[in-house]
Length: 178
Length: 124
Image (cartoon, rainbow over all chains, first blue to last red; front, side):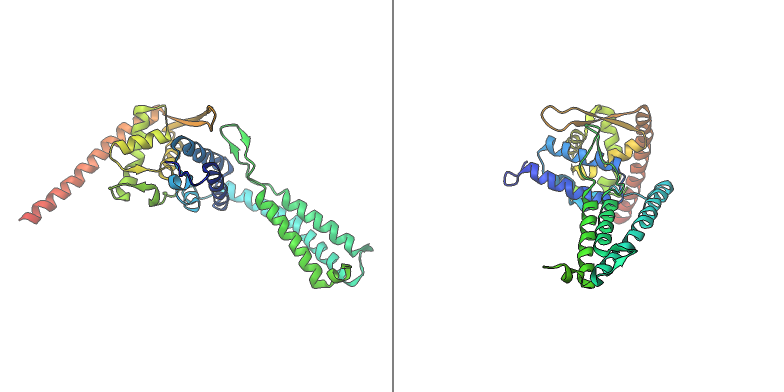
């Protein structure tokens, strides 16, 4: 029976969002995630039950789908991590150098510290935002579900906060303030 | 694939009993009534007196059966709502049902025999 005090569509949407995050956390393949989410939505629509009543807490239901990664999948993920570290590491070093230079009013290889900081921060945000994520395909439409970029955007936000922290730590924030 | 929590297995029977027989009973219903939907299988299990099987327990079981190629599934377009997933048993599924049903009967007969011996010992 549908709980008339709760908007069922909103409750289902919130449940699906939480379930998606937990499924990613448990390293469930994107192809499986799409299937699981579609089943939840279809079952709720057919029975009128709330998603939580039918499937339990999203963290528990996600755990039911976790399974050991294949060797091929493990190596693929290690490759992605290694590639990200190899690219993001040097960019991070340039970012730190830019922040120090900006704080001291000096340059990095002749380039103004603020320019270096800004370019490095933008590059780091771009790397994180474009990280390859598991594609989640809705089996009903064969189209990607719009769930894959939230972790990357969160990572980009963390980078920006780190930049601000660096600026404050190096005194560049004070020198830049009016 | 882990088992779903007991919150999605409700009824008068111990969850361990329900969980032990769920894959076989679900396969049996899909073989008998397929093509069908997950929630229809859950409804039939409840009508059969096996307790209320929630989606959180049912769909992982259906997925395991599909991984074993005992059932197949496809999505049908929905009318004014989400599409519906249809499951149907394969030939392997029908064969597996016959084999596993025999094995289950043998198992339950042995359990019953043990219980009977215990009853006799208790009354002596």
